[in-house]
Structure formats: structure tokens, C-alpha cells
Length: 346
Image 1: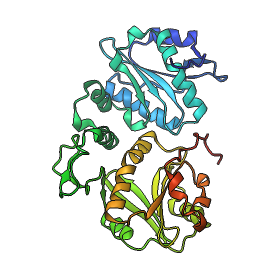
Image 2 (image 1 turned 30 degrees about the vertical axis):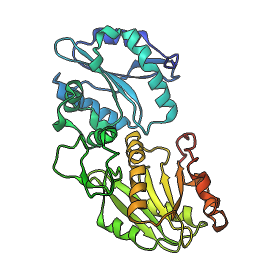
Image 3 (image 1 turned 45 degrees about the vertical axis):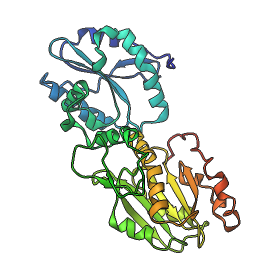
Image 4 (image 1 turned 90 degrees about the vertical axis):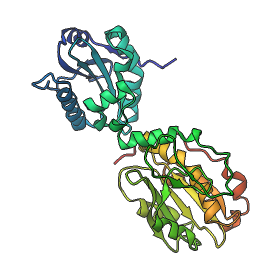
């Protein structure tokens, strides 16, 4: 059973909903976060056209981003659309409040006023569009899929791959959700994205004392080299990673670190604040990439440490010291992500 927040709809909100005949109503929290009220900052568009109403909501929520909120859209014909807009990067407390209040407010407004397909849970501003709404209610128009949705469709179809096919014969495997003629050579592994030539060249060379940072380029559908740093030690690993990743928007990355002459560590870094879709993407591709590395680039037992961490300060560099290299394999598979942290102070 979902946890309820104790927040309820105010009389003002209930009256505003009853009076709504066209356009949209944006819902927010009052000052002490005890009741939901109409958001007086939102201005209705001059037209009741559904596309323009969605555009006005998109502009408004973008200006408030990443603050969560609800919206009700009155369609022509009397149908209502309920929108729960909770960005991945919203403050954790606000995310929890809005996520745990949705069922309550729907009950107070009357669930019968909203069809199942008209209750939307959105996380990105670009999802606030009439075309995305039409895609959601129809569910079969691939032309309306965003690039992120196409990637998620690929992830969801991974289980349909024939993993039992022999790796002794060269073959190309196509994801069932991909309707193009492009296929990815996978060397018998479950690799979702093609490894670009610069990255292939980098990981085919000597990795001792080297840090190789890798990202997934969603638009090109490839694994790409972010940066390669030489003369890295376990003591300079975190600072080198920090410089390589930079101060851009929080996003997962992979990294390879040759921590001695014969051993390589694989690091999956998934910082707090990363989008859920990105987390899913990197998690789904990780094992396939590891299999690819072991099959095509690294010698037997060369890749003996797999670290999965949230933020950089969670990396246990003691496991990458020379004296610990013998025992690293025994515990590498027992690592887990730390509990989610709140947003960092700026």
C-alpha cells in the first residue's frame, strides 16, 4: 500500500476544479505544505486548443523547474487529464510529498473524473506536449517516441534476446524493438550500444596506470571515450575522475582504471541527482560491456575489481592498493550502491 503524506486538497482547490470548464488548473502546496491549493502564478492561455494548453504548462513548469506540481487539463468534450509532474532532479522531500499525495488528491477530486489513460506521471518538461500525450494514450505510434523512450524500449526488450546462442560463430543480433536495418556486433555478449573507434583503440592498448572514462551517447547510440588520463594512482584516482567528469549535469559514467601492471578495475559511477532513465540505461548495459571487455580486450582475470558507487567520495581506494589486489576478486561481486543521498549544498 502506498504511503500517504497527510496532505489534502483545500476547499479553494475543490471549488476551482468544479468551476474548471476549459484550459488548465495548476496545483501546488501552500506555505506550510499541509494543503494543495491552486497555483495563482499560472496564467491560462488565450486559446483552449489542447496543444496550446500543453505548451503553456510546459513553459510554466520549465520556469519553476525542478519544482514538482500537479495540473488538470479540461479537454473538449468534458474529459479531464491529471498530470503529476515530478522531475528526477527535484528536492527529495518535495518528490516524496508529491508522489505520496497523488492518490489522495485524485480521490478527493473524484477518480471517476479521470480515465486511467488520462492520469499522467511525467518527469521531463519536454513530455508536456500534446504529441506525447497522444502517444501515451495510443501506445502504438513509434514516430512519436522520444530518443529516451526508444532507448528504454530497447532496454525492456533485452530479455527477448537469444542469450543461449553460441558465441563460437560470428553473428549480429538485433534488438526486437529496433525496426531499422542497423545491427550491433556483440561478440556473443548482450551489448546494447556500439563501441566507437576511439574507445576501442584506447581499451585495446596498455591500461596500467591509466584511467579511461566512458559515457553512453544516446543520440548516436554508442559508447564513447570521455577522457583518458595517464600516470594515475589509487591516491590520485578520485581527483582524476573529478577532473574528467567535470561539473556538468549529474550523469552516470563507466571508468576503467589499470591499478597495477596486470590488473584493471571497472567503476560504474552513478552520482546522486542522475536521471532515473540514465540510471536504467547504464545499469542495463553494464554487464554486456563487461562481457565485451573480457571477451575482446582483457586477458583472463585481468579485470578483477568491479566497483559500483554513487558519488566519487564513496570509492574505496584501499581495494585498489597493490597489497589488496589478490583479495579484490573475492568481494567485488558483493558491492552495492549506497543509500540515496539528498541534494548536495551548493
